[in-house]
Length: 386
Image 1 (cartoon, rainbow, N blue to C red):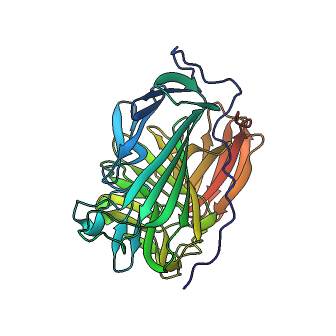
Image 2 (cartoon, rainbow, N blue to C red):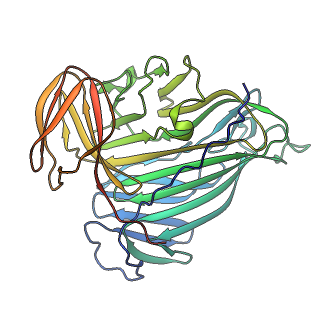
Image 3 (cartoon, rainbow, N blue to C red):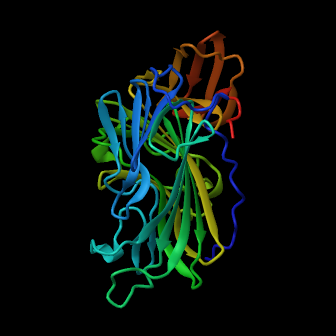
């Protein structure tokens, strides 16, 4: 089936707040700011003692992305394999991310083009340490056409698509927005595209709100499920004995799963130690086509609540602080959200039979008849400084 729809541009809401320019001093980080260090080819970002991440060129194709993330002192995610992408071309294998041509470990299938780092509106184009509310990293890569090897297969000669990735880091979150601009003049069938992946280390359990695994499920029991069976699925959460990772695909662009058939797997878990949001399967692409998606990774050590019936935690998307309430089964309980006003909660997503009402300045009463979820906006931050 041809892919001729050009998806409308995604509004990439800013992930930074405050109007103060990033400063090249290195005082102790305030509770709501990041410490940002650029040294050589590495970008290190820390949110107090709660979260740390390192961006650098990595994987077989040496693409610039988040390589390691940690909560507290514990490494919790490492890109020893793909984390964004890649594409599988029918009959030609994988391109991008960690993949070599025909998996022979010799020829690159993607090439790094450029990276730009901005902290609170100020470019970081030299080695420095600053404090900032948010950091934006713009990356451009070129994925190469596996149908165009040189005579000795030492390199792929023609581009297949341009991959533009915008990472926005705020607190313990990395928001990712990807655009694939296809350049291949001859049509090609894309067998599958895993846009948003998890390289969570040593996960022991996974939970998929709106999916098949509504409670914490041991990792060796995790498999896959289809779009037809779970059309509301857009998020999975993993944990181990050191922390949690939530991987939220927003329902826009290819994230609405319209490029999947009802019988296609929408989630694939426990595959070589990784989990995937599947975005595309069995589609023809050619020059001029575009695919866009956006999602948020969130890491934390302690959720607001995690018990037999309820998981509750926060994330940041664009300029909004988001509250997730996931009932694993029938639930009737209260939850307190410390330090947050609940007076202007706004629902942006829900599924299942659940009723939630505010019973105090920081307390909610939650009642559900079975598995259910509600996603709220807790607050909106000021526009970022450009």
